[in-house]
Image (cartoon, rainbow, N blue to C red; front, side, top):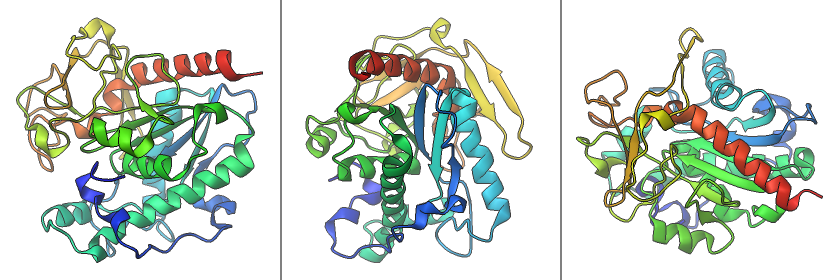
Length: 331
């Protein structure tokens, strides 16, 4: 990872390391949000990293230990973005990691350029992601096909994981990584960081690929999450050019409310198209709506709904790519 993500750009450039978890840390079941080691007949595995889910805290990080309220919120959100979005015929693995709080991220953004000590906060969650994934491979995977799924800060963690784990390749079960809401994912830097081992998805069919989108409307300022040279794919038609997809291609939106656990769904909600010049996904929704992240990122930016908006299309594509992987690699 070189310059792909301004929020964590310098993490890999200084010699100090965040405290890494002990080798047996993820042997403890309580350090996993989800650890579905049963259900051997499930179609595929999902290794999931949750995003920022806490506003303010006594520490800059989301500390789940001895915090049952936060554990409940993380658990509900994780269940919704795995089994809720992808269905029950999967095995989900989601470790607890130290993500930064909303307030911490906002404070860091307002202080750029940052000191090494401030960048260090991001590195802890990234190293925990690597440790958890390596434990998953050793003890749970057993040659099964898997996808990586994250949003926002979770996608940042998974990008770091892919870069630092050369065993992640399609020959070893890696189907695709959906790094949704990954900030400033520049195409040239992805190629430089991953080489030929992992490529950006160009259509609905590739294996061993990453797929990224950042959602907004035509009026929004793209520079917060993306910009010129950034990679983006449209999950409605799985194209990276500006060919639009109509609302008839929108399979299902899945909205989870962590406050009461309720779920609402909607089909055919909008059309969408990639703006290749700005590296963003434009959807047919107005500004100043309930979907905006205007209080944090600006009007017309739908970052908080990057996953929920496209739940049905995400599920269908993951299942499709898994079928292709099994056809090519399953003995």
